[in-house]
Length: 189
Image (cartoon, rainbow, N blue to C red; front, side, top):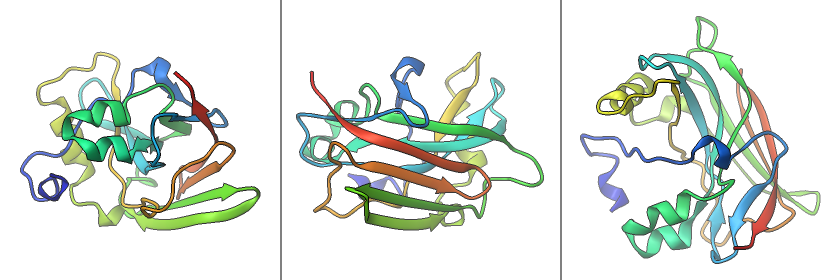
């Protein structure tokens, strides 16, 4: 079903987290104990005003339980929407002439026992949809009186043989925005 997302008229949009389910810099990423394949998804994240205008950028990590997600498309909320599976930070960089969100390098590094075991990179210029289109679509039939943050999607996903483990450290860097570092913890019920 994901093959259809990239050519579809509508972008893929879903609720990731309410504020109390979000972790910040240095706080733990939680992986579900009932998942055997959980990965980070580093993403440029838009800070959108109540009127739908992009006013800033931050780093997002859309942690996903891939095995649960792959079992059934209706399991997407269980795979992506749980406590501390949404990581944001380290700060908000204002959208202005110096940082416009296009052409930014995104880098992922995962360390285990002090060694880099996964690394990858991409650039926001590779995105299938424009940032403005994503923000506009989000606000079409929704209102956000306090604004919203919108993760834009990832193209850096570790291979099928990799899963996050307790004690790993996930480091995401986006040019002109900063570095987001988080330890990994397994979440029990």
